[in-house]
Length: 141
Ligand SMILES: Nc1ncnc2c1ncn2[C@@H]1O[C@H](COP(=O)(O)OP(=O)(O)O)[C@@H](O)[C@H]1O
Ligand SMILES: [Mg+2]
Image (tube, rainbow, N blue to C red):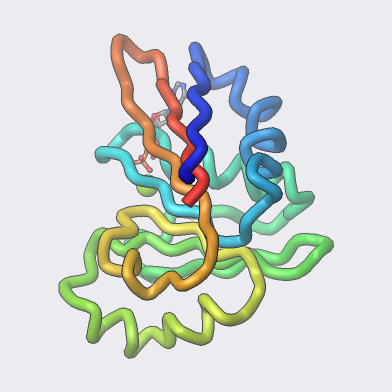
């Protein structure tokens, strides 16, 4: 059965303190999908998750590069933005299966194309924004 936890983020200052509990929730699955509209705060949340893992690497949105790689003391974080991908063929060309099998963190913005390639447990985070308050829905899949 899927579990769900709802978290309200009233402002940006709250996010650093919430990133770690969000990360550890549901026994810390290494695959995380962020499903939310443009501007909802996907990239911002991923940055805080990376910080909470202890990564000090330069962080940027991989909108043009599709995937960014960061180091943290426990290994690697692969941060994907699939917004510009047209089809699964491009995902395979990227080597998606190796990333998913790597055992490292794989965190996705715009995850629709990768959804049915994931064969293990993952965490899905949905974000809704209403009057600048973020409503996060964290689902154990
Ligand atoms: N929890 C939050 N509270 C207030 N502003 C936020 C929050 N999360 C993100 N933002 C702001 O929203 C804007 C879009 O964030 P971004 O992470 O780029 O969204 P996305 O990756 O979903 O398109 C940025 O200006 C960011 O600072
Ligand atoms: Mg983004």
